[in-house]
Length: 448
Image (cartoon, rainbow, N blue to C red; front, top):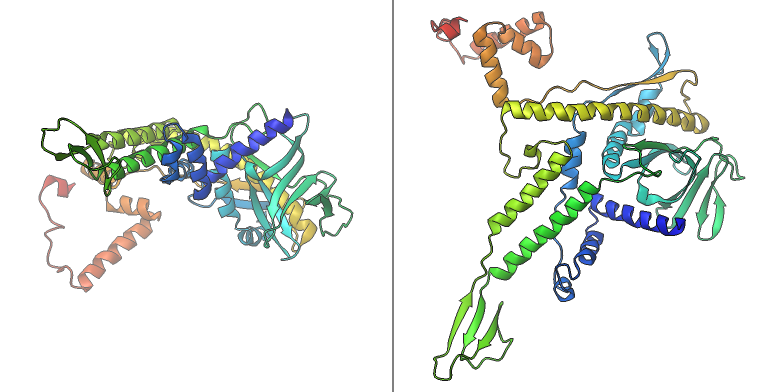
């Protein structure tokens, strides 16, 4: 039962991986199998290829936006007002920020991913490998099914050789074919030198097993979207040319007026021969609207605004947009708590691997801290202009306040910036110093 279940689990996750990685050849095969006689015949499928437009990444990018827009601050604190200066250059070499952002998006899709700090013995450097569930070929959990006891990862060498990398708390070895090969480490006996499994889990939701449930919502929507898009495309291709019917003609069945097809209808021997064309009555606009509506529903179910899935980019009201952003911000705050714990654990594992294999070492006694940047509320240009006009009209804000907000400077710096800009305008001759039409308006709004 476990072997059958694991085979099914692996097949499902490989389907998820095909769509996430936009592996078109595999996507095309998956869609053909799922639509065989439902609704397409084998004959039709042999002559067509599926359309594919990636809608999944759009949802994931929108859902994850704002958390890592500005890079979080990662520190290894070793004393009062003192941090380990060896950490930033190490994280830069690992492309840590980009890897964490990629891990987050994949976790939103797969529900669970693993990140492994790896020391490449041949290149003499560290890297971060993001392991998705389709790459895990062996997994044994502890009594707590959310924790790993032993894991095997499918990997490939530059020459294409595939092998399985196996880890537990005491051993580390590779399986190449049927042979167990010890990793060329400082210890040649296959022991795990780290004494811990070097995989950090990023899990979005706990389930009834180690993996939990991936985001079926996004996968099924993508499959349905591609099928509907292909159906629409095929219908257009097959109806752009007319279908012909011959009355009392001597053409044989299946004679063709390329690309149309002829059919014989014997009405009466005395009737004159004629050919008529038939055009399919397909409401393409309604079909397109249905596809767009489905996409909006998926966006809504993921906590995103309808505008996120609107292909016409229709503008929402400022109030509606604000409400949507507040709801989305609540979800992002929940994500930050999960990501905080994930990053602390990952940084600690990076320190373990780094200190065993290379110099300079990171402080063993220091503790890690991660600080996320504050996300600014989303506001359209039109809403911002209207808000500032209101604030200026009431009288509690002016150009100096707006400059302080936009440039994040002090009041003194804002005054200096505005003064310098006005002086430059005069110096360049853009405006005459004696022209006070803008400065001496008599209208009440200008006075205010």
